[in-house]
Image (tube, rainbow, N blue to C red; front, top):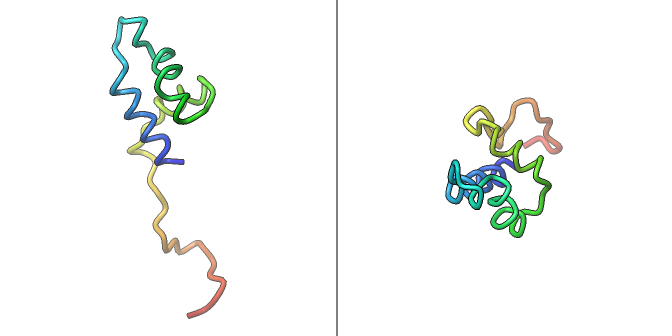
Length: 71
């Protein structure tokens, strides 16, 4: 999900232009994001307003995760 959020944010940064309605967030979502990553407009706004640096991916060996098989 974090990867999807990052890709959506990159698309928005690439095509968004402040003050230009034809390149507004709504138009970017409608023309570039929705055809590739189907989501509602509110979800798109949540994605672009989420600070990606604050969200860190869990390491693969999370100490809180229980192991099914002892090695």
